[in-house]
Length: 433
Image (cartoon, rainbow, N blue to C red; front, top):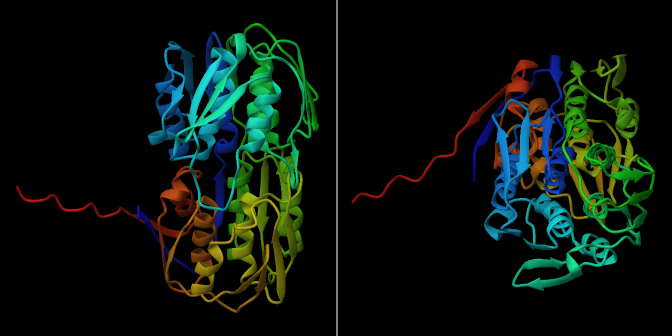
């Protein structure tokens, strides 16, 4: 079951916290270094389980990466002998799919296991494959592996539409974008994702020598180049981590100063927090203050692609709304099955009903600490936040999910006055000889 967090509730978060680099930006940036023929340096890389896992996979396909946990990764491709990303590693995280585009574009061949990751419902890779097929890749499935081949060793530019029923796919946009940089000719991606993490990736690729126009818009135009070289970048601040601390401040009736935050990436989140009764002010560029002195208020919210409210902050908002008098409605349009946290919050005394892809939250006077179990990364964060506001002690099990996306979460919370301690998982006793 992994480690457990022991959370003593009833303490308002107070003080300052610095946001780490964004997991969802760092992972595609690391994968993009496979495209380079030189040395790449990434700064502000968060020390997360997912980052370490991806580096293990990248090393297996020939990337020499030097990372001492100081936020700086220096890497260079030293071998192209293997283009196979094994199931044993890929099954641990969905972001491993980011290797597919760079490998087939640079080496003409890729074999990547179908990815794993959090259990939050169906997350198909069809748009990833659609983008690569449009660039001329021959795609097949072989015993659980995606096999991609570029005829003649090179992909070719094309016009491709990546919009889906609920908008664009961030992962598919990143994969197609990376692959197109080394394709012959011009590629136009229509319906491209506009998330800030895609902007971060595109700017990094341009520093490597790519030619990408339309950054920040749903229409990306890429003119392929023969090769890409050295570049450096600093990973953008994690808007989901920032949002988690913002919700935590509002939920506990606290007063938190958040450093290294991009509020221009978080307009929808700020809007909902203010609607719920929190004060959010930008003290200076990169620093904001979140506090709440009055009662929480109910809100209606729907998750949609950027710049709307992000699905990765849905669970945290639901946890906060459990204590907002009245009825709130939270609708999940990105991953309609992403509601495993509801049952655990109800165990703490919440009153939530699921109707289709919506959670109907009736505010209660208090939550009570108890044993709960996380089922995915953001659900883990939501249960920890609920524990901060609950009466008594909450034990959040399976906290390994949290370690995938939050750097030193318990240390940061303790620095804000929370009573949070990690309890290591008990290892099975060794058998007697």
